[in-house]
Image 1: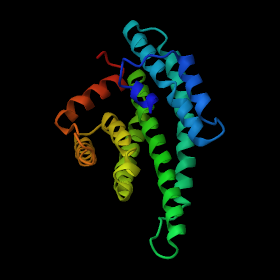
Image 2: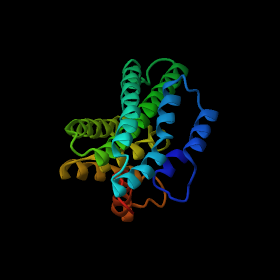
Image 3: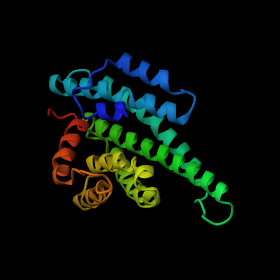
Length: 222
Protein backbone atom coordinates (compact mmCIF):
# COMPACT_ATOMS: atom_id res chain seq x y z
CA UNK A 1 0.00 0.00 0.00
CA UNK A 2 3.05 2.30 0.31
CA UNK A 3 3.06 2.64 -3.46
CA UNK A 4 -0.51 3.91 -3.59
CA UNK A 5 0.07 6.29 -0.70
CA UNK A 6 3.19 7.68 -2.38
CA UNK A 7 1.08 8.98 -5.25
CA UNK A 8 -0.59 11.44 -2.92
CA UNK A 9 1.87 11.92 -0.06
CA UNK A 10 4.97 14.03 -0.67
CA UNK A 11 6.52 12.82 2.56
CA UNK A 12 7.14 9.42 0.97
CA UNK A 13 10.17 9.94 -1.20
CA UNK A 14 12.10 7.12 -2.83
CA UNK A 15 14.10 7.11 -6.03
CA UNK A 16 12.86 5.23 -9.07
CA UNK A 17 15.40 2.50 -8.39
CA UNK A 18 14.34 2.22 -4.74
CA UNK A 19 10.68 1.83 -5.75
CA UNK A 20 11.60 -0.91 -8.22
CA UNK A 21 13.66 -2.76 -5.64
CA UNK A 22 10.83 -2.50 -3.11
CA UNK A 23 8.38 -4.12 -5.52
CA UNK A 24 10.79 -6.71 -6.92
CA UNK A 25 11.70 -7.92 -3.43
CA UNK A 26 8.07 -8.45 -2.46
CA UNK A 27 6.32 -9.60 -5.63
CA UNK A 28 6.83 -12.25 -8.29
CA UNK A 29 7.30 -10.46 -11.59
CA UNK A 30 5.92 -13.42 -13.53
CA UNK A 31 2.41 -12.96 -12.09
CA UNK A 32 -0.23 -10.44 -13.12
CA UNK A 33 -0.15 -8.96 -9.64
CA UNK A 34 3.62 -8.55 -9.70
CA UNK A 35 3.66 -7.01 -13.17
CA UNK A 36 0.94 -4.48 -12.42
CA UNK A 37 2.66 -3.39 -9.21
CA UNK A 38 5.92 -2.94 -11.09
CA UNK A 39 4.07 -0.58 -13.40
CA UNK A 40 2.68 1.28 -10.40
CA UNK A 41 6.20 1.63 -9.02
CA UNK A 42 7.03 3.87 -12.00
CA UNK A 43 4.24 6.35 -11.25
CA UNK A 44 5.79 8.56 -8.52
CA UNK A 45 8.88 9.19 -10.66
CA UNK A 46 6.79 9.74 -13.80
CA UNK A 47 4.64 12.27 -11.97
CA UNK A 48 7.64 14.17 -10.68
CA UNK A 49 9.42 14.25 -14.04
CA UNK A 50 6.14 15.01 -15.81
CA UNK A 51 5.55 18.15 -13.78
CA UNK A 52 9.08 19.32 -14.52
CA UNK A 53 8.75 18.50 -18.23
CA UNK A 54 5.50 20.43 -18.58
CA UNK A 55 6.89 23.39 -16.69
CA UNK A 56 10.13 23.53 -18.69
CA UNK A 57 8.58 22.27 -21.95
CA UNK A 58 11.34 19.70 -22.35
CA UNK A 59 11.46 15.89 -22.67
CA UNK A 60 7.66 15.70 -22.92
CA UNK A 61 7.63 13.33 -25.89
CA UNK A 62 10.11 11.02 -24.18
CA UNK A 63 7.89 10.85 -21.11
CA UNK A 64 4.79 10.23 -23.24
CA UNK A 65 6.52 7.25 -24.86
CA UNK A 66 7.64 5.93 -21.49
CA UNK A 67 4.24 6.30 -19.85
CA UNK A 68 2.43 4.90 -22.88
CA UNK A 69 4.62 1.79 -22.82
CA UNK A 70 3.65 1.08 -19.20
CA UNK A 71 0.01 1.90 -19.97
CA UNK A 72 -0.12 -0.66 -22.78
CA UNK A 73 1.36 -3.29 -20.47
CA UNK A 74 -1.26 -2.45 -17.86
CA UNK A 75 -4.18 -2.64 -20.28
CA UNK A 76 -3.06 -6.12 -21.34
CA UNK A 77 -2.85 -7.15 -17.69
CA UNK A 78 -6.29 -5.66 -17.05
CA UNK A 79 -7.82 -7.79 -19.82
CA UNK A 80 -6.13 -10.89 -18.41
CA UNK A 81 -7.42 -10.18 -14.90
CA UNK A 82 -10.91 -9.40 -16.19
CA UNK A 83 -11.02 -12.72 -18.03
CA UNK A 84 -9.76 -14.51 -14.92
CA UNK A 85 -12.47 -12.91 -12.79
CA UNK A 86 -15.20 -13.74 -15.29
CA UNK A 87 -14.05 -17.36 -15.37
CA UNK A 88 -14.88 -17.70 -11.67
CA UNK A 89 -18.56 -18.04 -10.93
CA UNK A 90 -20.16 -15.86 -8.29
CA UNK A 91 -19.83 -17.82 -5.03
CA UNK A 92 -22.97 -19.55 -3.83
CA UNK A 93 -24.02 -20.11 -0.24
CA UNK A 94 -25.71 -23.38 -1.21
CA UNK A 95 -24.04 -26.76 -0.80
CA UNK A 96 -20.83 -27.48 1.11
CA UNK A 97 -19.91 -24.58 3.44
CA UNK A 98 -16.17 -25.24 3.05
CA UNK A 99 -16.39 -25.21 -0.74
CA UNK A 100 -18.49 -22.06 -0.66
CA UNK A 101 -15.93 -20.34 1.59
CA UNK A 102 -13.06 -21.30 -0.73
CA UNK A 103 -15.02 -20.09 -3.75
CA UNK A 104 -15.80 -16.80 -2.03
CA UNK A 105 -12.15 -16.20 -1.08
CA UNK A 106 -10.99 -16.90 -4.63
CA UNK A 107 -13.66 -14.68 -6.15
CA UNK A 108 -12.87 -11.85 -3.73
CA UNK A 109 -9.14 -12.13 -4.50
CA UNK A 110 -9.68 -12.03 -8.27
CA UNK A 111 -12.08 -9.14 -7.89
CA UNK A 112 -9.58 -7.22 -5.77
CA UNK A 113 -6.65 -7.70 -8.14
CA UNK A 114 -8.80 -6.68 -11.11
CA UNK A 115 -9.95 -3.61 -9.20
CA UNK A 116 -6.40 -2.57 -8.35
CA UNK A 117 -5.35 -2.97 -11.99
CA UNK A 118 -8.33 -0.85 -13.02
CA UNK A 119 -7.26 1.86 -10.56
CA UNK A 120 -3.67 1.85 -11.83
CA UNK A 121 -4.86 2.07 -15.45
CA UNK A 122 -6.92 5.09 -14.48
CA UNK A 123 -3.91 6.74 -12.86
CA UNK A 124 -1.81 6.24 -15.99
CA UNK A 125 -4.68 7.52 -18.13
CA UNK A 126 -4.71 10.76 -16.11
CA UNK A 127 -0.94 11.19 -16.39
CA UNK A 128 -0.94 10.55 -20.13
CA UNK A 129 -3.84 12.93 -20.65
CA UNK A 130 -1.85 15.64 -18.88
CA UNK A 131 1.18 14.98 -21.08
CA UNK A 132 -0.78 14.55 -24.33
CA UNK A 133 -4.22 16.21 -24.09
CA UNK A 134 -4.75 15.85 -27.85
CA UNK A 135 -5.11 12.06 -27.57
CA UNK A 136 -8.88 11.51 -27.85
CA UNK A 137 -8.56 7.75 -27.28
CA UNK A 138 -7.62 8.45 -23.67
CA UNK A 139 -10.99 10.09 -23.08
CA UNK A 140 -12.88 7.08 -24.47
CA UNK A 141 -10.80 4.73 -22.33
CA UNK A 142 -11.39 6.91 -19.28
CA UNK A 143 -15.15 6.69 -19.80
CA UNK A 144 -14.87 2.90 -20.02
CA UNK A 145 -12.74 2.71 -16.87
CA UNK A 146 -15.17 4.91 -14.93
CA UNK A 147 -18.12 2.77 -15.94
CA UNK A 148 -16.29 -0.42 -14.96
CA UNK A 149 -15.23 1.09 -11.62
CA UNK A 150 -18.85 1.88 -10.72
CA UNK A 151 -19.96 -1.58 -11.82
CA UNK A 152 -17.23 -3.17 -9.72
CA UNK A 153 -18.18 -1.07 -6.70
CA UNK A 154 -21.69 -2.48 -6.93
CA UNK A 155 -20.50 -6.07 -7.35
CA UNK A 156 -17.94 -5.85 -4.53
CA UNK A 157 -20.51 -4.58 -2.06
CA UNK A 158 -21.12 -8.12 -0.80
CA UNK A 159 -17.58 -8.20 0.62
CA UNK A 160 -17.81 -4.92 2.51
CA UNK A 161 -16.15 -3.57 4.46
CA UNK A 162 -12.64 -5.10 4.43
CA UNK A 163 -13.06 -7.33 1.40
CA UNK A 164 -14.05 -4.35 -0.71
CA UNK A 165 -11.60 -1.78 0.66
CA UNK A 166 -9.81 -1.68 -2.72
CA UNK A 167 -12.91 -0.07 -4.22
CA UNK A 168 -11.95 3.27 -2.69
CA UNK A 169 -8.75 3.34 -4.77
CA UNK A 170 -10.75 2.49 -7.88
CA UNK A 171 -13.29 5.22 -7.28
CA UNK A 172 -10.66 7.86 -6.56
CA UNK A 173 -9.09 7.07 -9.93
CA UNK A 174 -12.50 7.19 -11.60
CA UNK A 175 -13.30 10.58 -10.04
CA UNK A 176 -9.97 12.03 -11.15
CA UNK A 177 -10.31 10.66 -14.66
CA UNK A 178 -14.01 11.30 -15.32
CA UNK A 179 -14.66 13.93 -17.97
CA UNK A 180 -18.32 14.70 -17.24
CA UNK A 181 -19.96 16.07 -14.13
CA UNK A 182 -22.77 13.50 -13.99
CA UNK A 183 -20.35 10.57 -13.82
CA UNK A 184 -18.17 12.41 -11.34
CA UNK A 185 -21.17 13.06 -9.09
CA UNK A 186 -22.14 9.38 -9.18
CA UNK A 187 -18.59 8.32 -8.36
CA UNK A 188 -18.43 10.82 -5.51
CA UNK A 189 -21.69 9.64 -3.95
CA UNK A 190 -20.46 6.03 -4.18
CA UNK A 191 -17.21 7.07 -2.50
CA UNK A 192 -19.15 8.70 0.33
CA UNK A 193 -21.19 5.52 0.75
CA UNK A 194 -18.09 3.31 0.90
CA UNK A 195 -16.31 5.77 3.19
CA UNK A 196 -19.04 5.37 5.79
CA UNK A 197 -17.87 1.77 6.33
CA UNK A 198 -14.92 3.07 8.33
CA UNK A 199 -14.88 4.88 11.69
CA UNK A 200 -13.92 8.51 11.37
CA UNK A 201 -14.69 8.59 7.65
CA UNK A 202 -13.43 11.82 6.13
CA UNK A 203 -16.51 12.50 4.04
CA UNK A 204 -16.55 16.10 5.22
CA UNK A 205 -13.26 16.87 3.44
CA UNK A 206 -13.66 14.31 0.67
CA UNK A 207 -14.01 16.89 -2.11
CA UNK A 208 -10.83 18.67 -1.01
CA UNK A 209 -8.90 15.39 -0.94
CA UNK A 210 -10.22 14.41 -4.36
CA UNK A 211 -9.28 17.75 -5.88
CA UNK A 212 -5.78 17.46 -4.44
CA UNK A 213 -5.36 13.93 -5.80
CA UNK A 214 -6.71 14.98 -9.19
CA UNK A 215 -4.22 17.84 -9.37
CA UNK A 216 -1.35 15.46 -8.65
CA UNK A 217 -2.40 12.88 -11.23
CA UNK A 218 -2.90 15.64 -13.80
CA UNK A 219 0.65 16.85 -13.07
CA UNK A 220 -0.49 20.23 -11.83
CA UNK A 221 1.58 22.01 -9.20
CA UNK A 222 0.05 21.49 -5.73
